[in-house]
Image (cartoon, rainbow, N blue to C red):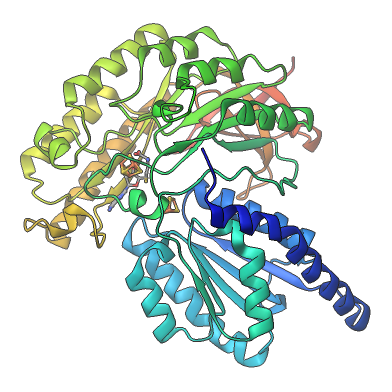
Length: 473
Ligand code: SAH
Ligand code: SF4
Ligand code: F3S
């Protein structure tokens, strides 16, 4: 994909701007005896995590140092999400609290970016009610952060840049990625599906894929640096490569990544049921290093709702994929996303969903209450469901899903599972990691095992995780 003239100019000037801020920061270090500090707060999905990673790398090149404390920071960035209303409310609450910080330290720079900023009404609200914010920029302007920061610091007035374009693929020139045991690799950006409830196509622009070679090179570097697990990321990975000058299928990309020496575990998400091909499932079955784990959001079970959501498949189509996958890989674990309370949802629709849940017997599920998003077709639908009914249905569905997940966890009792050890558990003194099928496992062991694959015998299945004992190799 070609870069726009504006983006080319921005990229051409970035090095000089970064160098000039770095120079000022070194002078600050000499006079104050400490480096300037930054804090990035990231909400939402891996798309935002990825942008935050790029912003952090740029700030470090500029000579800033990370701090976990907002009271310590000279620069705070909030990378926002608007997929549901509660995500937005959290962000407004957070930026409100920065007002007193700014009063105490007028030199503090506050920047807000991410998906929320792609909505004009949000930018207007921030300009009007959150005057302590210095920089506002959108998801298509991350590469211009050095320019925006420079302008905010020199002009002392607030700077806003939100492009409303389809988006570009800007390869990460400043990729000082830290070592990660598990790394997420974006293979594409944006989304063309326009599910009627969803804001993502409006905030992230049209679907566009990275060149296959750029993806493979990034993964080879990660693996060389010690990364064991790779997750290929996109809003709809199964349509990867369609818009490239030389089109490539997701199945081809997946196979090429699986063949890279050192990729010990390979996952991908999200799969859209309308685009998941049999070839992809066959590649999955063929390669031992591809996790036998499929995240396949169904959202709803009734064909009326699926149509009204613009999902592009029927319940029958969905079940055919599940059967094909299970025939090829009997051990495959399957997770999903569900939306409860979509406009027009009837008791019968909920019954159908409960029935589908029992038929598929998911290994895990993310269940969301439908949230009206401005600018989406579903927001205009007149048959919205009252909150109390949404909550009642949500609790019903959640109970039914959780019962099945617990039963499936109980069935793992006494089994020996292979775990990639990720670190210490947050709750207790155990080590924690995940199985090939994405189940969380806790066990006692030496911290030298972090980063290794170990065998664990499950001794105590719990509701959402498994506890076990290390089995000597
Ligand atoms: N591209 C992915 C995920 C996108 S967002 C996919 O298509 O599956 C993650 C999940 O948030 C969606 O799967 C959906 O279940 C949920 N979601 C999106 N918009 C929502 C809304 N307006 N209200 C409630 N849940 C929503
Ligand atoms: Fe949203 Fe649908 Fe695109 Fe997923 S596929 S990001 S739910 S529009
Ligand atoms: Fe949220 Fe944007 Fe991701 S709306 S879910 S951060 S693409």
